[in-house]
Amino acid sequence: MTAAAPEDDDLEALRRSIGDPRRWTVVIDFDGTLAPIVDHPDRAAPAPGAIEAIEDLARVCEVALLSGRALDDLVARLGRTPPGVLLVGGHGSEARHPDGTRTALTDLDAATAALDEVEATIRPLVDETAGWIVERKATSVAVHHRRVTPTEVDRILPEVRRALEGATSSAPGFVVLDGKAVVELRVRGTDKGVALRWILDRAAARADLLPGRPDIKPLVFGDDTTDEDAFEVALELGGQAVRIDELPSATSARFRLRDPGRVVTLLRDVRDALGPDPSVGTPRAAWDASDAGGTQAR
Ligand SMILES: [Mg+2]
Image (cartoon, rainbow, N blue to C red; front, side):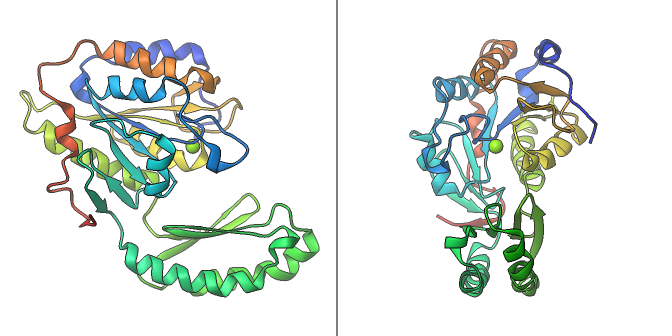
């Protein structure tokens, strides 16, 4: 990671660098990027104009949303599903194609069984009235202890960690991750970098059918540390990344947007920079469920 990303002014350079729309696949995070951060995750909603901006973008290039939220939760938060947009949830564990069909990118049945077992072990270990929070997602169990006293953390956390580590060898394979006042058991291989490669494979398969077989490059928008995996893959593949962040956090993104309120404007700028509808047909063909890999879930 580099120490600090450039300032907003350099977004002009980003706009200039976007030429041929066929070259770009735009991948956008949800919370903190499309949706302003709110006190409770259940109240998150797209910023005004965000869905319309995505719909416009999807007319000129491939667009995917890539969120840590479970897919059903992401769909519910969106309010309405923008046509032609690929939705990827759970840090890349599950995808919803524009026609409504879904692809499981990890063995969710095996993950569910192992996570159920871990969750059942951990809940009795921690006292939620003392501030512990056990957060269950489709591909992870996270134990938060920000509001727990240090003495209590010292006493209980080793036991919690032992339970999580005891499950790492269960199918489909897990890792234990440490964050700020949180320890998490997550399905191995479900990060946004892995997800971005899968998304780009879909887009590239379509590009092979186009005149000139243009290279597909990712343009990734995100606001958080979990987006950094996608940023790194984007740059490795010759693409670009934009970190939306009011604070000067370390990031590998080349561009930074300090005002989250300007995301919609920037997406519109990107759409304008891509120019008029290209003569290559509808981009959404890239997101057809057929030949998507993974396991057809629905
Ligand atoms: Mg986010």
